[in-house]
Each structure stands twice: as structure tokens, then as C-alpha cells.
Image (cartoon, rainbow, N blue to C red; front, side, top):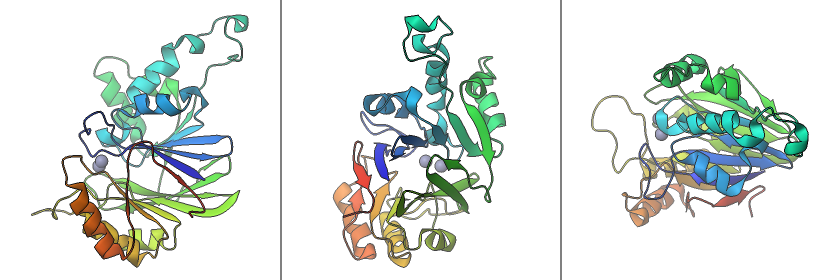
Length: 267
Ligand SMILES: [Zn+2]
Ligand SMILES: [Zn+2]
């Protein structure tokens, strides 16, 4: 398995950056995990968006799904997606229609968002929507996905992915406050991609994000081989964040950066 970071910003983009978006690949299978603001442009830099087999969405916050809007416009209106005679566009005998694997209720949310300008069906016509719940285990080529709910401000799922072609397991913690269930879910993973959004824990109310130190604690408790912290703003001191995460993890921690590639099994 191979994971490429397309975007790692929190709910506002870094300068020149993109929100949550990660490309997962095994052989010819390509899955985009999350599609936040700015991710479609980054996806185009690395891959043909028509060649993506599926998009998996962790939760319905703007920074995790909003670029489904330009992605849907591309799948609908790009010249090669038009129903024109095949000989004009060799190799494009039918328009691409990737699967869109999103939490229950996603269809209604998408219709509300794009319905604001009267295009209710935009996303569901461009993609094949499948709504998942906690017990769902969708498969895309050799990749098998699993989910657990994590503490956040809307229903949110951490995503586990395994491949029938390699023994590796990757876990994406999505946006999450501290969670023992997340530790169990990530136990022994080859790679844990954990958010580390906060300079300090939330001062009041529900926990819905983590500090870099807490991300490190989760990685250590789960005994993961490799910890990558993400969902960090470029306005947060990276040296501080890395030092905090490493002190808690007890080993090297990587900071997600756009274009970084992680392969499994990790070296
Ligand atoms: Zn987020
Ligand atoms: Zn969120």
C-alpha cells in the first residue's frame, strides 16, 4: 500500500495548501480518503481524477468533503466526460463515475449544500454514492475498509484499511478528541495518521481534537510502527509540535506534508 498526502491543513488552508486529502494506492486501485477544500487541485497534480476508483469520506465537515463540488463538476462537464462519439476521445468510451463512500446521511447533506444554487443532484450524478455505517466493510479492489466512531463535533469515523495483497494496515484517525477506542482500533498498525490540531486542549466543552502530545500518546499506547501527525496549521510552530509528539510517542514522528509518500511495509 502506498499513501500520498494531498492536503493536511485543518479547517482553513495553509498558504498554498489544501485541507484533508490522502491518496491510497495498491496496484491499479486508487482511493481518495477525504476531499477537503483545495484537494481536487492537488489530486490533479498527481493523478488522473477519472482513474480514481472510490472516494471515502471520514465525516461531513467542509474541510473533509467540500472539493467534491469541483470534482463533481469535472466529472460532469470535462470534455472527455461528454457523451461524444468515441473516436473523438480515444479510450474514453464511457464517462468515469467513481464510488463515493460516505457516512449515513451524506446524500442529504450533499443535496443541501449544492441545492443552495439549485444543483441538488450534482454530486450524486457524478459519483455512485454508498452510505456506510460503523459495521460496513466496503472493499475497493484489494483494499478493505473498516470504521469506528471517534469523538468529534459531528458524527465522525476513523478509517482502517487493509490490503489482500500485503500484510500492512493503515489507520486514519480523522478528526478526533482523545479516544481509547481509537487506540484499540489502531493497535499494531503499520501507520497511524493522527490529527494534532490544537496548541492546547479545548478550554471548555466537548473534546473534539488532539494536541501533538496527545497524538503521540495515542501512537505509543497503540504500539504503531509509524506515526504521522496531520491536520496541523502552518500557523502552529512545527518544531514545537514535532517535539511534543515525539516526547509522548517515544520515537520519531513525521509531520504530514503535501506530496509525502508512505509505503508499507514501512522501512
Ligand atoms: Zn477537519
Ligand atoms: Zn471535523
